Length: 273
Ligand SMILES: [Zn+2]
Image 1 (cartoon, helix red, strand yellow):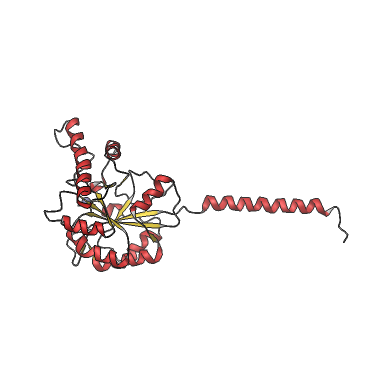
Image 2 (spheres, helix red, strand yellow):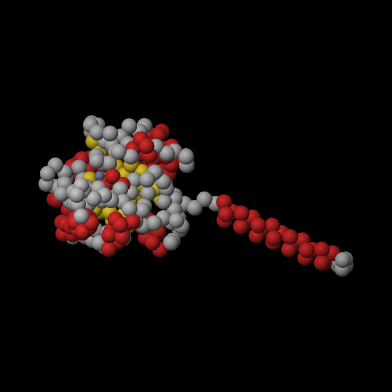
C-alpha cells in the first residue's frame, strides 16, 4: 500500500489535538463534578403523638429512614469523621443519623425502627438526664450493645460558649471542662465504650470551646448549622448538622436533599431543648 508521506505529520497532529481535547474535558469534569456530601441529621424525641416542636412521629421517622436508605448511603458518624480526618473522599452522598438529649422515646420508638431498618445512629446524651426523666442507663447499655453509638451532649445541657453572670474566667473554664470531661467519663463507664463525639447544646460553641473539646479527648463535635459537610473543607470540631423539625411532610424532608438552596435554619434554630 502506498502512503502519501504528506499525510503522516497531519495524522500525528490530529492525534495530538484529540489528546488535548480529552485533557481539557477531564479537567473540566474534575472541576465541575460535585464533591459528594455528608449530611448529619439531628432528631430529638420520636413519639406516637407530638407534644413539642422537634417531636417527630414514629411513622414519619420510619418513612424518612426508608427514603434515605433508598436514595443515599446511610453511614455511621464514625465513618464520616474518619473520612474527614483522613481526607478520604466519600464514595457517594451520605447521611448520618443522630438523636439528641436521651428522651425515653429514643429507646421505645426510634431504636426498634433503626434495628428493623438495620441503620447506624448516634445518640448524644447529656449525662445528667438518665435517672430523672430520660432514658435509663440499662436502656443506654442495651442500645450500646446493639449497634447504637453514644456521644456526649455535655453533663447538664449547658450553653458552653458563655460565662454565667459574675463568673470568673477561671471558674468558667473549670465548669466548661467538667461539662466535657465528666459527661464523657460517665457515658464511657456506663457503656464500656470510648466516647469521642460531642454535640454542642443549642449548637453553641466558639474557639475556646473547640480547643477544650479536643483537649478533653473528643475527635469531633457537631453544631446545628444547616449545611452539608464536604471532606475537603470540613472541620472536625465544627461539623454541620440539620435539626429535623416535627412538622415536615415527607416532601419537605426530601427537598433538603434534592435542593441545595433550602435553608430553614431560622425555623429550627431554637428547636434544640
Ligand atoms: Zn439538646
